Length: 324
Image 1: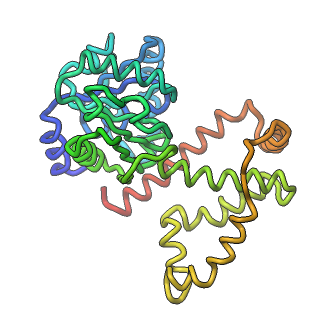
Image 2: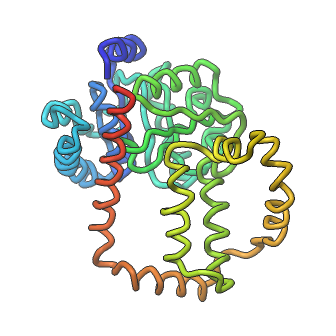
């Protein structure tokens, strides 16, 4: 991060800390994002053991990041993080709080009610909700104007995209603040113009997953061959361009030419699927059996670590490319 960007963040926050509420994997990831930018981070979880585990895990994660050249001073970054004894302690004087509790409406609603009681008048709250709109747990609350969805991809310190989704009650100033904060943190900010369940990222992911499971159910291809199709095919382009840019470049006359050439085919494919039922137990067992034949349950943790290291290598390459 350049000196100019550090000054912008300091100006935005006025030197005040940020709070991370919920010390699970996503909360830990956010804590690293904030601390890496030089911000003071308070971590709170209703389960104090979760906070302890998080603070024990973070230094190890930072060491691995250092090995990929993604951080320079793991000890110094970790020193920016402190545990909070309770919710009031976590947000005392904070300019921003990132909520990363369980994906349950009632739980998030209770937390927002508690925040309404103890938060300062200008605290902005971003929720890491993966698909629940903010209005579902803030509607009618006084704090609603200062709450919006700030949805990352896990782990947030490796994948830069963030979706900003205001509720109808979220103020313009709150959106502008969150946008400036996320850009200062080198996030790739996506603005949703209206609330929708699942937001953009998970709706796109859902469409691909529904078809992937259906292809297995229909006996068209194995799980591994479907993974290959994305990993060794679609994913190569999608790792550096999105679907609209992809098709814009895939026809001589650009996106309109592509739509005229292939629109009917894509319509016929979509029309062949109804997806009216959830995945059935028999299908889930089939997919589980295929996946376990490739990767045992005992090896899942190791494969996740492998995934994260691949993401670190990609992040390091992109930082070098963009000079950040």
